[in-house]
Length: 588
Image (cartoon, rainbow, N blue to C red; front, side, top):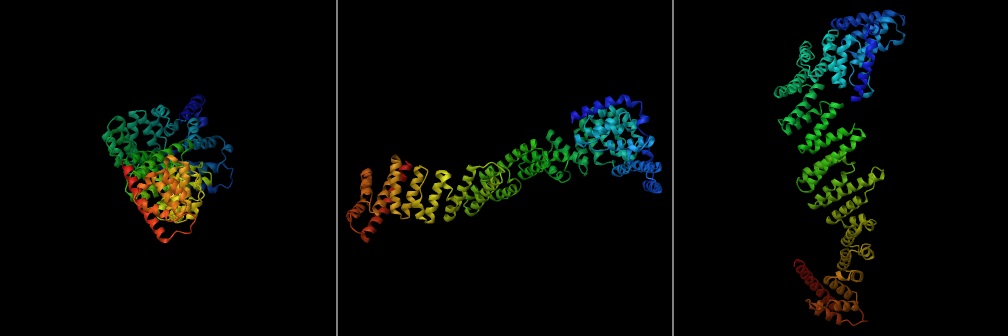
């Protein structure tokens, strides 16, 4: 914007010299005051009759009637209608006074436009209007809307004089811009004279613009109490100045630490529904996000950031998303730590998910929800939440929205499997893990082993070949096979453990190996285990087991039922003793 101001000012200086002495040839005098004071409906009807009376489209009478109609509507600040009548004329075909009036009316309309940014006509209009003494007030107001305070201040001495050439409606339209420019320039004499004009206009008298600007003057002069009262009065309205007053209240209250945070938040939450869609609306949303974050109002802060993202350029969007990620990340962290009750945590998650589920960091933070549910025993709901998050990641990867995150997907799949197992849905856990456990490491394989064991799918468990070399995982599979009575597979699994990890092959492992080998009729392995672990003979019931082994010579048929019962009862006593001994050793 500063660059644009420099261009405008440069053009003004270049064009000022040749045009200043040629006002009569460039600009036409307008009768805005007269048109603004006459009976609008009667004057319009008369001019329309004159227009209808002219049958020749090129007649000078038709051009004069259209110019008069445009000027009448301009005087009453009906700008679209005034522009429409001018558009009905071919400016290049007009000559003399008609051409000058056409050009001057177009210029006046352009000077009354809002600042439309770099692509607007306002910057050009202030350049083209150099030397137009009747339009100095319009030029100063245009500079003020452009934010060119220095250029507006330079025109202040002639502003009051040129106001008299404008109709009451136009005066009411530009007075707020002029007074604000005078306040920015700290030209108190001009500001006082301009403020005295406000009560003369019903649309400005005691309105938000008047109250806001008086409050602004009080703030600039250091009278903060008067400024606060003025902003409060102005904030009751619904126009642009009322919104500015609301933001000024929050800004001043925060700077002076006189406005409680909850009151500032309440004011901004009300203001968001009263003004939006432009730079002032964005300013309010930025402030709302900041204050809501400070007050811990996650929903409001995220609403404001989501609203800002709708129109944010790419260079701002990433910063806004990062800010939102910090906010909802803190919410999920608090929920995971138990700082939020479960009900509000789930409700907040549902609201956040509605707007931010496609944000790259959402799933990584939201996984705190199913973890919390699983920790409280709500297994079915935890499994559902894990599945929803997993399917969301898979869907986003399917459309190429984000780079694949294999680690996150694996974590979600394992979490869902744990929830299913905790809820007794072992078959569903097997279906979830089958085909994926090989690529997800020891933890996924351990879950698959547990799921197969719980589901009673012992044939699949026996056929399972583990890729991971983790001793605990191998032990889990071997124990699962043992507890489900797959003696041959259990014996083989324990032997593989013993071979792969001899130092970690524990006393309990040797006991189960011995019993599994015994049930499988493998006396050689029983003897080998007894030799490697002589303490086995010291366990209660070992003598009974040895008797049972001795009661069945090699090569004979199936053992008797009495011997089988004796061996199983001995096995139970031995394993109970092993468990107790192991627990005591671990506690020491």
